[in-house]
Image (cartoon, rainbow, N blue to C red):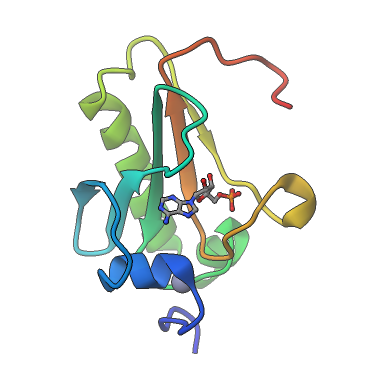
Length: 119
Ligand code: AMP
Ligand code: ZN
């Protein structure tokens, strides 16, 4: 069923605390934790606790939860004191775009110059 935990999903395991993570924020519906392989001084992942494979399926299946993720991405940027200087929120979607974990997640990147267009 949409949103149900998936046994083989790394981020569902982080939500269940079966895999450790450096959690920076948590709400009833979302979790934010530091990326294990940071690409910028601030690199935090914000995920819905419920399992949706990507941002589009999250937005279609649970729009209020997609809004929670976006709100939390902003809250992370404020907490990391990067909101003033600018930050980037990225949803890689599909393996061709670099998605490797198929549980929707927003990358919050900040703390260095962020080129445009991104690579
Ligand atoms: P993506 O490539 O967009 O699917 O993003 C997946 C992200 O998850 C990558 O940036 C990885 O570095 C990160 N990642 C993988 N395993 C872990 C983990 N155990 N804890 C935190 N971040 C992770
Ligand atoms: Zn999952």
